[in-house]
Image (cartoon, rainbow, N blue to C red; front, side):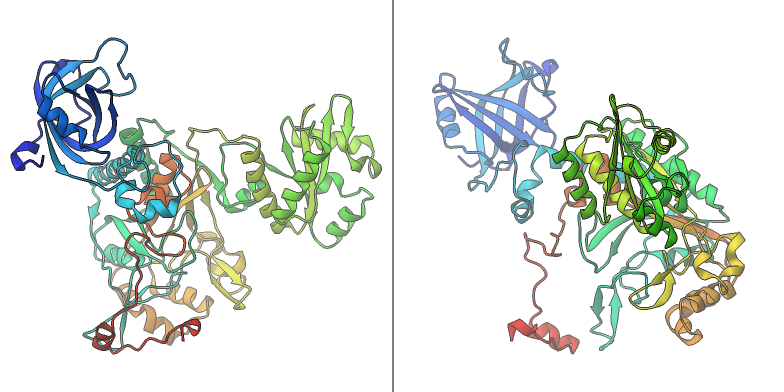
Length: 597
């Protein structure tokens, strides 16, 4: 039967009842998770956000309500009145907080019926992601998703509490902004009032938070929504959230220490984990050289070795040619893999080629001696030197390759990750933070043949490198830093430029004329003339942080209503075409795609 409002004024949540409630009369509401019909007994698992309670209907106690219970199916929304009882010995569910008790139901009210769900709302099922996104309101009922949304809430609260305790002001910045070049394409929003003109959705609050420093706010933060029109992958969404902060009169060390303290607070409050108070630090060049990546995963120790000096005099054509062309010889040590079969070695070489390496030579340090084709080209002393330099022990495999320094490092970095996953080398349940420092200030865009900012054009140069901005821009280090967690780039930050003449020098270095700089960034340049303080900050990917904390690979798992990899919402069907009336109001004409004509 369908009950009125009074029937579902609950007294307890479904994850609340324990032995101390035995004998109490209670009212529970929620969704039917599972049901079992044993003839004269019907058992329901009643579920809400807080947990599950077992409900029992006994035909001998109340035949009418038992008959009503027989009509109930999974995902029906019901209210149940009854008495809390201890479960019979041997039937307890030890993994549930409520597992020692059940509710002997005396009355049931069907609040709403439900169609057969397209997938089980229980955990432990393998469900196609597109189906999950289409029925996200059902997917979010699953306990694993409830836990992720709860973690998201608690993490946001911990972030806010920390910054509040440290005298930061939470200030919202505009969502309709002027389009400014920040590295990705903007989402544009047409203005009806100012026809023919467009706002952009912010890629970040970067310029506004710098202006807040000019305004004297001193310490700002925001859990900010950002928008970027770029190709999607597991750690990208067209709209995402970042923890944004900025400080005046702060050094790089001040900002790094503040973020470390914030994350220590967050992990303590949300996961009950005590992080090491000071995170590891590494320069950009060191990260590339040792791990082949500017976001190395330090949960396993496989490092890249430069062995050019060891094998540079060997009469091996590949090595001699590489060195003559200015390249390097590099190696990785793989612990305990000297006994790989011929087929496994071939598969390893094929994997290396997929990562971009031109080839791979293996050196196996086995009990019976060293096994490698390099025996033909060098004496045993070279192989012994290689063993000592890489720290290889009996049973280890060393792989060697050669080529351009940067590309070999990056390709070995990809191979390093492939091998770590293949051989189970990554220590699960650990959180390895790393600061990567001293990034290049500029990079050369090969496609467009010009210099551009490595991060964004408001990053200051390393104090020792400022005078090289015109003479040797690609050698200039940035006063910038990235935070990496378990091989994921959580965010980037820098000490900003706060002087107009320095900002104009950087704009000129990336090819902006004075007129272009004034047209695009005049408001910022003008602000710098009114007593701008030195300042710096950082933006951390909130969704990425939550994904790592949750142990999932995709940020879609920690966002309530994400888009798929085509930037489409399978649930709502967005984006959709605008109506002729909408376009007419905006004085916009849409050209149909070629295939649709």
